[in-house]
Image 1 (tube, rainbow, N blue to C red):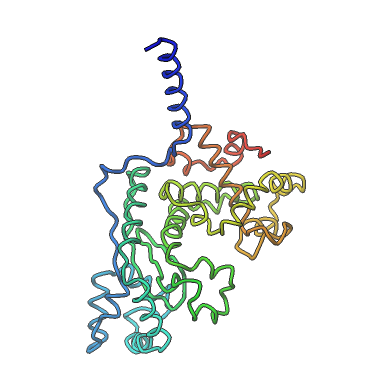
Image 2 (spheres, rainbow, N blue to C red; image 1 turned 90 degrees about the vertical axis):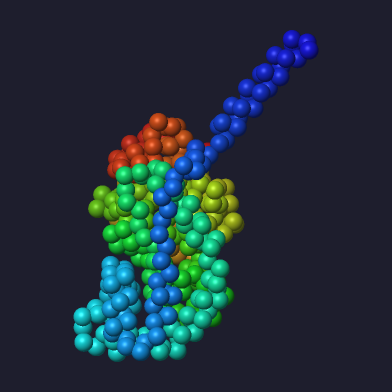
Length: 340
């Protein structure tokens, strides 16, 4: 073969490998050697399978199996107090007999009759977590029916997931929940469980809210949490991670420079005014001050892009290093972030 052709082939192969290397997701690491798996307990099945012949005895046995989560569930989730209180068996009997709870139980059983895919996705996510944080103990995940209370709750080494908060946008009960507007209902579907668990666990393990006083602090901190979700779910689409529609995500991508310029030109970046922060961080129909086509939480999306760029420019920094870093100004400076 002609040497010129050989040289051209070598150059082409080198360029191709370089491009592939640049485009490769650095978070898609090899977890095949990680054997430890997270434990997932179907607590709602154990609870509703109790025969209730002797309610107190049966509930006591369930509490003995899962003492920490049982107390979290009764005290903090369904707010009925503790098993040691005299009226507890009666109150729990009312919970079991409640018509809405019984109907939701049936809907949940049908919706999650095949839970294997979600279990596999959670297991994989926490293998990635173990890869990045080998020294931290894995939590135990408990599923539950909470009567439409918190979607995901956490305590020390515990994650609780309310399956009745993920029944799908068309669930008839969601339309009657007075404190749940439509823009929240659109994310109450099974595909959102794993990303919600990842985000909430990141918030639990790396709670830095005491350090977040300005808008800059908040958007970088939230960006770190979203990068944590990236690390646990490297192959999940951004729409699921942040809970946007494809149109909302495209709006952010198309308007990224304008959003950043708005924050800078209106001197909001270092504002510690609570309303300035909430307008960019909190969920809502859209971001106040932006067009109604905009999604909510655009500050979180912007912080996410800053952190992604920071990590792209500093490949020596691990996910664990990032999550320990609370110098939000330094992260912004070293990211070189300036969308055009």
